[in-house]
Image (cartoon, rainbow, N blue to C red; front, side, top):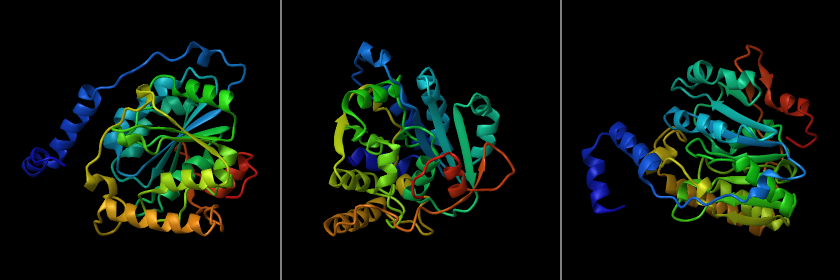
Length: 306
């Protein structure tokens, strides 16, 4: 962090700082977009693809990203957006109902809410979104990320070219905000047990999943097209503000998780959540019917351990 940034941090109120950062991230950050190959639109097979997002008190990000992502990918033949409302207290439910209900009615968006969590746990929230997803392919899209135009077509193209035994990460420095943009065949994701729920609430869960995947024989490839790397930045405080009862530095949590992950892999523990992913009481698309997440996942016809 530069001296100027530190000075501004002390002088500018947090909400104003966030507004300025959002404006910069959307309008001023430079990206080198390139033309996508025409063949991505001419594949013989189109896998079903689910973009998986979670939110706890991050409506200030999601209101910029989610609808843009839907619009940029809805022409893909078999697309689903999954949004987990992880007991968000910032008006997310009302916002979705007022602004995005038509996407739910069209079958493009599935919105699930749970009232149980009091703090955010990245692995548990992401597992819920991925396990509930109906697609052959699952792609994590953090709430502060923009997919870019036709990412779904490009993902489908990659799996047609390289096969199901691959993890694709859409990331390159200095665009650090897309580290978590990981794409798996859902079967492979579930075979790994998903994200490790025994880790601390946030930090390194994405790379832990990648590293375990590589150890079981999945190929890992980074895709660096800047078309797909737009995101809204976070302060260090925002990275972990909802994750613990008392404020903790994100990098302390990340460092502890890195050590635990490395030890697990060293000891051959490559499948996470041996006892199954956590079960949540959830409500789908504003229904008043309380559902067990595990029951709904099985109803989707996925014969995988959850």
